[in-house]
Structure formats: C-alpha cells, structure tokens
Length: 210
Image 1 (cartoon, rainbow, N blue to C red):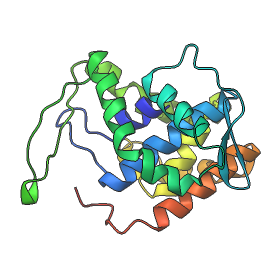
Image 2 (cartoon, helix red, strand yellow):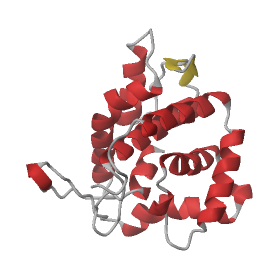
Image 3 (spheres, rainbow, N blue to C red):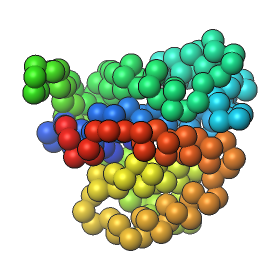
C-alpha cells in the first residue's frame, strides 16, 4: 500500500510530490502500517501500535523495518509518535524500492534555502499511474472496492489531498464513498485512521507548500 500511495501523490512526469512533505510522511507511514494491520502482524491497543505476529517472511524492506521497530518498543507508541519516528526513513525506503523496481528514477536537486529536494519521475509510466487508475476504477464501481483501496480512499480524504487524483475523478463521489468507508473500517484500521487525523491536524505546513 505504501508504494501505491507514494505513486498516487507524485506527478509521474515531473516527479514532484503534489503534497507537502509532512503529509507525504504521514501517508506513507499510515499506508505501511495499514498493510501490516491487514496482514495480521500489527494491531492497535489503547491507541498504541503493538505486534501481533512478528513474522517477516515475504515482507519487503519497509514493512520489515516498521515491524521490527514496533517489536522493539514493547510499551508501544501512538500513531502520531510513530509517524514522527518512521516518516523520513520510510519515505526514503519506499522511493528506493520503486527506483530499484524500475518504476521511478531519482533526480536530486536543491530547493529553497539549499534543502535537498529529490524528484522521482516515472521510468515506467503505466506502472507509475496504475495505483491511481485502480483507485479511480473502484470509485466508479464501488462493489469492486478492496480493504486496502477503501483505506486509501479514506486516507486521501483524511489528509485533505484528494486533489492528487486525476481530474476526471468525481470528487463528490470520492467524498461520499470515503465517508462510507470510514464507517465500515475494522477496529484497528479505524483507530489507525483516527491517529492519522490527529497527526495531520498537528501539521503546520500548508498542504500546497513543496
């Protein structure tokens, strides 16, 4: 889910993120944790992430990293705390995976005040656009929604970034379906989304700032 979210929020031609860095970090952490929750490896107890099954077989590097980090904190952290701890390195890991898979390439540069600003234009345009196309298809045919798709749609609404989808996506329909999805998320995913709401609310960077 995290690579899909990363692709959805990046322009495949310019390689620029279409959302602010803090929302990118929040979204990547949220989708990666959601993937592990759906896979039965993580859950939320008293608003804190805990491991239910420390099995890394078949997981990629970002998923293993998150699972190992949570496993080494038996007292648990909140979603907001983990977003701060994991965000930057997890975004880097996901970008590295997509680059290694020849979906994107990395172009390094400097932004304002000399800050590093990497771009990730598509190497394989069809694969880069696929997650957004899949989500748009589910929005057109709601009976095809998967649990990861429903969570992603709810997350876009939660973070206020549904404008990253293609212009032909009906925003009113997305809002309606995302609201319905929120009401049907299983307990741990609903708690995760609530934690991401808190994380996004604490963000001070305007969503349009790059």
